[in-house]
Image (cartoon, rainbow, N blue to C red; front, side, top):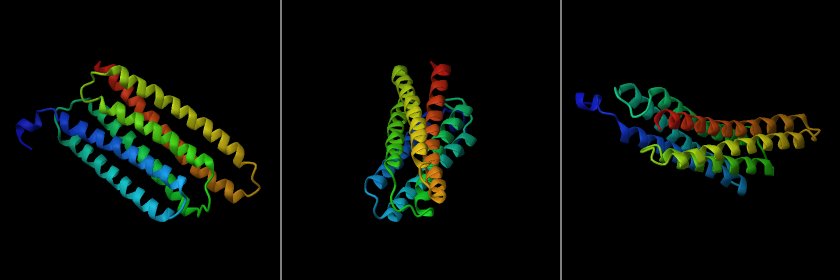
Length: 209
């Protein structure tokens, strides 16, 4: 990197990486829906999802590398770090929840898992829209709307978890309860991570508008 590059805000680089991460989150959540809508060849589908998670890790590492070597950034370094980390967490929790399907040898998921996947996918879609507006910050109302919707979806995920656990505890099989509860909680954590992205977007909007 030249001295000129060092002192020039890397707007394009960072925003490209933000948008890449948002797309990866949307892709991962879409693949999760695919697993539950057609619960066959789960191991192969999980491998495809894992490939997406690896792409997310690579984008995250590139973003932190840029942050470490860029003198002037388009947003506050703390904002960049939080945004990058929270989007990475969305994908990580999706991946971990899907992995548990294999670890626990889940023969047949229930409708709550598909409902979680759809909720996360909708939130990831809103993240993608909101992050896409960061480049210019000329559409603050769009970003605000995305954040409101993501917060609503996180509340939906909380309600899903309550309903799923209530139904699960009707079971007399303690092993099944442990397995399903763990999977539910990973997907609810993915929704929480989406809400953290919304919180970061809201903070950026307040600081820079």
